[in-house]
Length: 400
Ligand SMILES: C[S@@+](CC[C@H](N)C(=O)[O-])C[C@H]1O[C@@H](n2cnc3c(N)ncnc32)[C@H](O)[C@@H]1O
Image (cartoon, rainbow, N blue to C red):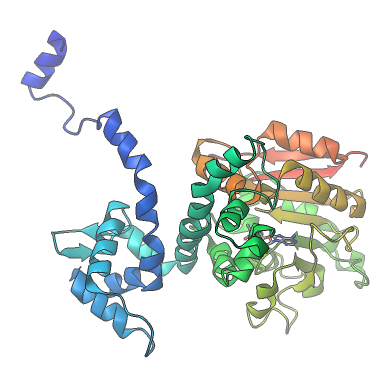
């Protein structure tokens, strides 16, 4: 220890909370996976909401209140499982342990309860992602480190193969989630995700993008023809889930009719989970079944905007190009593709890993977007990347 350091320590001037040693930091990160396996237990028995309701509570009290919510005949949670789950959740920071036997909701617990999509997200990452993570190395070893993964032949498929489920081993992860009854929960996750960074129109405005101009032909009603066979559609949200994005657009631009806003999906759960007014009035949007992987052509031509929000990061490069090329063939000179994704920066390394393991997808840098645009006959017309939250890349026809 240098003299200066000894003097600082002697005078009590040293940092009162010195940073933990590297080994402790390493252990804190690397030992997390088994704890994550208990998150679905907490979600299944609604332990976060129960703790918020009870205030400070023991595991016995939490277990008893959780079991009281169950339907008759449903398996109950025992006190030891509740106690271990609460203790482990406190280690993850999802609630606080205030004494050896007492637990308390913290800000994250309250967020999980007030924003149900966050609990569905927690479930997704501790179910599908954890499985994929556990089989990433085994998949690589089994294929002599062939890389990148194909969209429906990655760690998840390898896991099902080794578990003896040959049928699911051949399916895309979205289909596996559907067959496993997980899609309703995943769709709920997509509605609000872990948190919302404002609405789509406000976000893109903050990024400096002129959404009003991109929607412009529809702003003059005389220019908006009666839609027929897709003509007159202003915005198509591909893989738009429950249509949140289009509802936000319509709320900012209320003159847009439901037949001018189309969600294209292949997701069987979507129709049944739409908001009640989505199909019954001028408000809302139209849904159309379209499978961007299988359908050879994009049926809606000349839309102002084709939006892809968190779609291309689900796709390997070749599949991303295939989808972009289908859109290019449908686009007019005024058409724009809006790609809404997280930037490939230090904030989103975990998400990058998830996309690789689940779908052979990836987050992408500006250089990668430009390369995809070029081979698809498109150019990047606008791009803005943010540290946290959704970034925006706009593509238009190269010859336009
Ligand atoms: C990550 S989610 C994004 C949902 C929504 N765009 C959002 O940002 O909230 C991906 C969506 O793509 C849909 N999807 C996946 N494969 C598809 C396909 N082959 N054709 C059409 N939609 C697909 C899924 O059903 C899901 O709703």
